[in-house]
Length: 450
Image 1 (cartoon, rainbow, N blue to C red):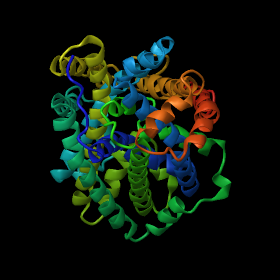
Image 2 (cartoon, helix red, strand yellow):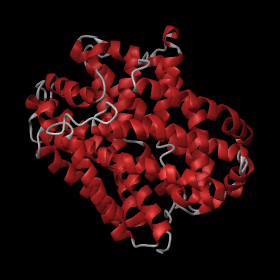
Image 3 (cartoon, rainbow, N blue to C red):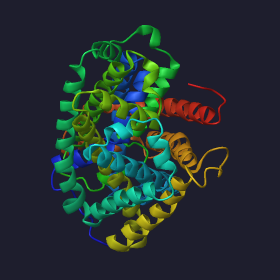
């Protein structure tokens, strides 16, 4: 078994964990949800949940990783043998997410290339995205480029790969996001979008807004995916978990906030104030935004910066997803990083190609009514994420007890939120996550609509 690496300092850990948290969930999903669920009210609810609910889950996962010095595959069993099954379920989440996340990363890579080479007008055409993803070869080529870059970072390990990449990309990502946000909000017509996004309207406060914001936490903060446990296992015993968690939370929330401030007013400018133009999922980033960039002065430059920004975020997240899987193989089978990385990458390529073909020649292939990519997304995000999150809270709250986590946090000083933490992890968090699980499954099968 390879000697377990550690991050060389708290900055490296915070930036790497922030890089994991900041991904397509922040730059793609967050603005769409904010637009759909009331703008300023969604933003307010999300921030409140992030500093309470999200804080508790992230502290828990980082502490479990650092205490056990193991990947999630082995960490839960190390704390209590009867709960070893939860580690296996937790590891299935990144295994399912990795292939299709890299496929979407390939789409982002393609669009970054299109913008940089001055093809913004072509990308703004209604048919461009659909024709691209349904092609048999082109999306697979870009997918292979993206997944290969991800694997290369992992091959260099924690210090030379993940930590060095994060120290470069995360500050660059923040600078680009701020620059684009400032540019967009100063455009004519953007003010209405800014008002909608920043000013809460009490009539938009309802159960749907609350559940959507709570569900977004899992995507946005890389919770219940095994990633924070994995990164926590590389976190030095000399550093303070509570402070590091707050810094990760802050970075992640700022990027999500700026993404909304960048995208929602931009679409308002383009659409004349029509919120419906924000669309959903792929149609926002890959169909609507190219139209926005094409309509703006210097659209090629703005579009290039935006998709390079999204590419940075996608790479840092895909690296963390792959590391969570590779770390499990290193802990369980005592193999070297190179063969473990190549094995997982080969699996990712196989399933990712199937996902890509599911938009074209395999369009008729359905699993429980879902397309291939949509099925993997539903099982991982709508079912397994809340299951893992809920049972993690139950295990910590009633089996190993919150005091074990609190003791790990207090290795380097007082855990100021420990009483709040205990109440949340035992009672509040499991109930809320169960509500997410039920609503997500019912929505996935069309029983309810949000």
